[in-house]
Image (cartoon, rainbow, N blue to C red):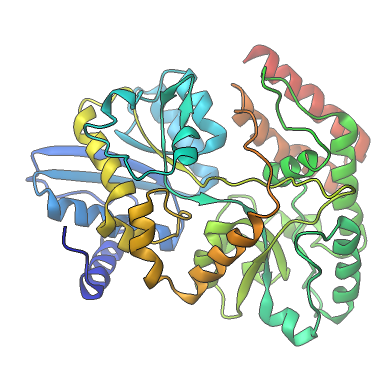
Amino acid sequence: MKALSRRDFGRLVAAGAAASALAGGAGPAFAETRLRYIWWGNPDRDKRTNATVDLYHKKHPDISVDRESYAWADYWPKLATQAAGRNLPDVIQMDYRYIFEWARRGQLADLTPMVGKELKLDHFDKNQLESGKIGGKLYGLSMGGNSVALVYNKTQYQKLKIGLPDPLAWTFDDFIKLAKDVQPHLPDGVHFTANKGDNESWLEMFVRQRGKELYTKDGQLGFELDDLVAFWTIMTQMQKDGLTPPPDVQAQDTTGALEKTMLVLGKAITDFTNSNQLVAIQKLMKDQVDLTTLPNQEGNRPGQYMKPSMFISQSASSSQPEEAAKFLNFMVTDVDAGDILQIERGVPADSEVLKHVEPSLTEVEQRMTRYLTLLAKHVGPLPPPPPKGAGEIQQLLYPAYQKVSFGRLSVEDGARDFMQRAKDILKRA
């Protein structure tokens, strides 16, 4: 297969950007087969995805793909509405946190019968492939490996001539000491770090560092009240000390849109992110940004893990399952698609695609791969799959922490209320 040239790539991205009035981009009306594809994105991802879809149509003129893209916070309510209306798109971007729940509800197609037929996965990483299986059946293909990270304004750190501690061994004490060293040198309105007490992923890493999980294998909460109290105590104390933005400022970052994060808005010089988002964040900032690990706790037990950044799945209600599966296969195994998508969604799971794109990675993308190479020395296993109701609990965490950060509830009362509500959700799920 002929690889995509740089000129072709640029033309396709530009075309994708134009089509990207986005989300709503639709394929030519004359196509014989129409698929629908939905994903959560950001401006860079939308351009790349639109360009890749355009390439697919170029290779398959009889297939068109209508597209929808939303910010993370808007995506799941939209998808739930479509599911309720029995109007799910053929191809659905899925998250590790939700795939188990959606598969158990019967909303996703079992892809297992298509492996070796429409799905050519001979070069697919075995662990990444396993991560999309539930009960031995395949419900999603990993679009890239990644992990959570702290993203920081490297330019600002260099101006302050302050270096970061050993990323594999630094602790929350080191993190807070660094914050107190840095904060006095920052302009008014700029803080050391965003306040992510409402972020489930950071809470998960925190409890894993204490030898626990968000959920047990039998679908119950895997952490205790004391764990959440400890996490929120750190976050609220940093807020009281002026090391994070005040709650009314932090509240601007509610949708998951990268352009609303405290780092991008210039309200903080450190923030929480997923490693695959580095490229998109860098595009939104003039200063150079880079990644480092989350601080550790006593005992240095690894909390982070390598995970599929997201999956591409197929709706169980698709009227064209074979064509939808061929499109899935294209997105994760085609080297020309890889030329466009690069590692924006994480490191490709298909070894042939990875081998093909590695020489062309930009300096920013190499920062991301360097981070993952470093992190690989200090990671734990994949957690148990989230149970039914986990998505609702994740949505509950934000307002629960808001009550604490705005002072309407104490840390202990807020944590106790959240734990009870989470248990109630799991009980009725």
